[in-house]
Length: 97
Image (cartoon, rainbow, N blue to C red; front, top):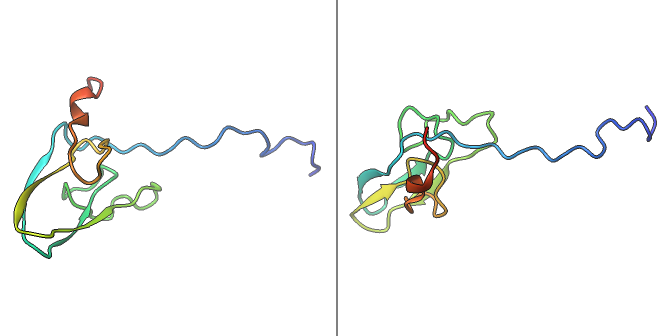
C-alpha cells in the first residue's frame, strides 16, 4: 500500500460512545462513610446505579466514588450529568424517548 491510497487518512474521528439512559431521574441511595462504590457510566448495568461490568467493550468505564460520611446521595440515572456520578438535573432537558 502506498501513501496516496487514502486508506485511513482524512477519516473523521470516531464518535464518542454514548451511554444508555438507565432511567430519566436520579437513584436515591443511602451510603455509609467509607463505602467504596463504582457508579455505572454506560447505562447497561443490571444493578443500577452501580457497575456490574456490562460496560466491557464499550469504551466507557465506571466512576469510582468513596462516601465521606453517612448520608443520602442521588446518583445520576440518565448518565448525561456534568457532575459524575451525581445527578445535576440534566435528565430534565433530555429529548423525549
